[in-house]
Length: 320
Ligand code: SER
Image (cartoon, rainbow, N blue to C red; front, side, top):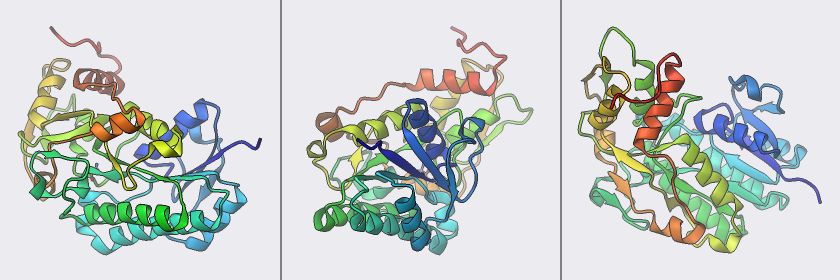
């Protein structure tokens, strides 16, 4: 039987880097695609195609040439950058997804498409906890593109039989690769300011609670939802997944258990309004029931791992 070929678009980004590494380490055949080469040495020798996902002809030709069976489309403009460059963000997020879905509908050799949605599909009318099928009235370009993307996935599933899989990711935090242009980015970039002489200038208020997740669980969710039988996927759009929720004050207090001298100050900017429109947490009962979602990394472990990755000379154990 021919082997699966995993075609990862956005393979040089925050999620793509870690996912490509994980699949490669587990012996899967991967083809990486992005507009920029992977920064990680461990990925440099893998097949890489430099492409822009907005170019439908190139995308179609490469998916065919590489014999892609699974497409993981992880390239996107995030929320904060999207507010500053709305047309660019909309074009990248929507045209890219539509290209993939159309090609998947035409080439039946593509068995499955994974595309990440986001907590950004929810707007301020939801209250602190977003239900699986709660109102989706996003107020950002990024959120609108994710909401529309969910609908497009459902449409291609219904009318063309494309096996689409999706989860609504919260802020993702990992040791390997920084995000870019998101509202939850503070929770990653702070780890590059642990030992500075100046306080870390946090762009959100100290009491801004948002859903967050360690990259190990983000990759785990992707592996899990893409491996289950198709009939386990009962939600045609995207599943809520929840790991932890915290505000900057709580995160920084946990950091201080490892780095007592760490200091931060709060200078909320335009990203505060974006964060204020998002839920504190997601109800992920459906993901747990349908395909067994269960997160593994809680806040203390997340912080210990990030601190030790960013300051290897420091002892990862907190002061008790
Ligand atoms: N991490 C994303 C952002 O902040 C949310 O999904 O834009």
